[in-house]
Image (cartoon, rainbow over all chains, first blue to last red; front, side):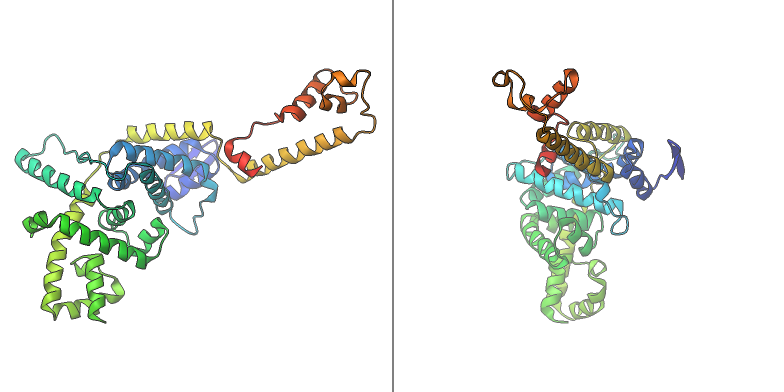
Length: 192
Length: 160
């Protein structure tokens, strides 16, 4: 779909919006933010374990997107991939500046018409235990897990987001899984 | 394929062959299925996979209003700390610096920029302004003394 803004046609696809952003189009930036914000908050919340911290990190990433728009090269990466890398970096920077381990708030919110409150309570307790176990992992391991299981990202994509090699990502995932398997053993036995 | 590599794959990618690297999947699966210890390892890994998938796929609710508010805050913050850096802005910035230096050099090197009758009472730079008068002299004085042709942001100061 094309929109006309100040006499210039632009596509509503992220790539087209990004071109407009590179030309200083604030409306395009707002539309692009709508596209990118949800997934970005999802990843940031997983990495940081706290919604408000995640909002701050994504905010910093959006400022960077606007200010460094000129450095985006559509030939090298999709806007979503490029922005994901900015978000991940913002999260890891933020994590470094935070206390090493913080108690995690449960971030999941269920629809109010959830049919089974008992199941919901059980699910929430399980989510909390997983979140607590995840809180012990370094930010890069959490990021790798969030991208691999949450986004279905490949090793190459995760490596790009973390600015490392696919082999190193395998190592991150393996160490994370060993640590989590130990911490989540009782839960894992329940779901077997 | 070595057995050790299959173990590495299970440890990194989990217990589901569908998640394993495409180019190694068939060989790794063949080897894993012929080894009871590896089958047990895959089963254990699958239960951890399920927990991790639940965690990673948990929805974090976001509305368009959240996104709109974030966009406004980001634009505000970006403008407070400096406008977007596009190539023509960089060029203009460089041009402004060059022009400032050139003006300063010309003013300071003018042969008729001789001190007036009371040179001691005036600042050194004011003396160099020669026959500029009124607002021109004041502006040039400000530029040379305070460098306030523009106010650089912290990032611009790094460039300087």
